[in-house]
Image (cartoon, rainbow, N blue to C red; front, side, top):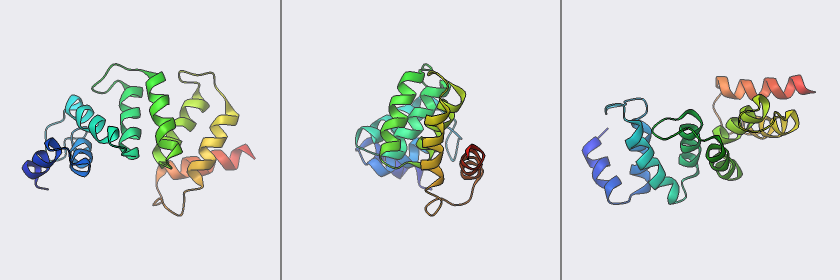
Length: 141
């Protein structure tokens, strides 16, 4: 990956570069781990409408990565991204409602969001999270 080129494009407002680079920082992929820089870049990309980056920001708010922990803000961002069809946002909302994180536990809402996530099986590679959604839905019936 050409990090200097990505950084230049990201600083010029390129949403794709902001997204790619912003997603490198939390795990330290070819850059040092830096949650604050990830938050800055992903916020910029999300502000330009990148729904996957809204989901990533929601996770950062939910876990307090690079920003103060805020479940209400995490839920707001997850909802925006989930309405745009983001799998991981739907999964995040399902977990929040199933576990009662920042909201009263609500198995009906959890089932709704897990079902929405599981319904994307044709667009998502088989992964642990997809199996989690399918299992929740199957056990709820």
